[in-house]
Length: 214
Image 1 (tube, rainbow, N blue to C red):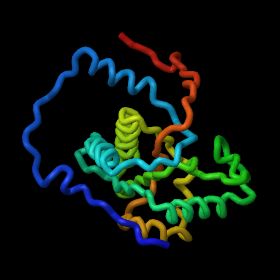
Image 2 (image 1 turned 120 degrees about the horizontal axis):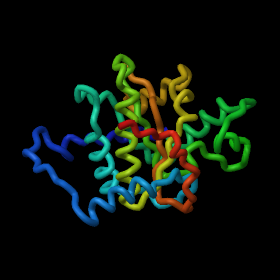
Image 3 (image 1 turned 180 degrees about the vertical axis):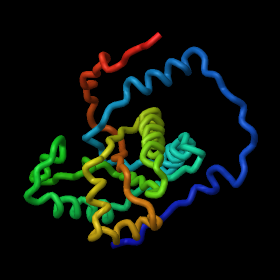
């Protein structure tokens, strides 16, 4: 298996940042943000085109700008584009899946050519600090930043919860070491990323779950 190239983003933000002016969006910018939120979809079909380093850098900058409790930033994010590693991850899932039943798209794992990450060219693995009780919530905030920024760049994403327990299995510890996930962290969520090859309709939303109390 090829070695995983780990890209550090120290140069992206620098050791210290200049004071930033607070921007209040007006007009079309504000509409663009709302449109981005309302039009994002989970994508389960991707083209073979790989996501550029420039777009990855932008998405990762958005990810680490997510809020976190006490600014602990209890996440470790790995962007995997190595085809051999992606193939190995899929093999590990298929081995685990044998004889089991799943819900959603994972239920089709017996089909030829099945990919747990929908054959996306990029897989994002996010691990959370097990000692931090707010880590899962904070990872979720970073995940949303990734999905929305990717959508704004014309990319598609799909959260992959089914893959989480498989990567945390003891027999797959070698993968976490390959990803350089520190001790005390566990995979919390994964995300398929690439150029969408479909435009799915929005599933039903339950507005009755929202109550306004005045």
